[in-house]
Length: 71
Image (cartoon, rainbow, N blue to C red; front, side, top):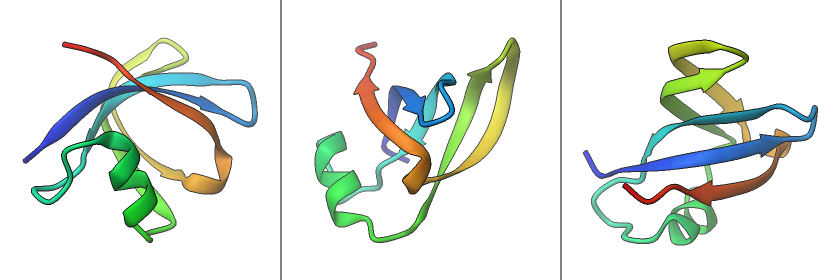
């Protein structure tokens, strides 16, 4: 698994943090978002509204921006 830690801002104003698996072919987060045609992404080990270690399935249409978090 090739994971990246991210911070995601959604159109409803919420901000979440977690990890996404960008797969073996991608090295950059931006490439993965551009090349991945799936409408939904899975965010795991996510933190949202005080809830931690959640698994979230997020529609890309609800995303304003994604910021990589350096480990």
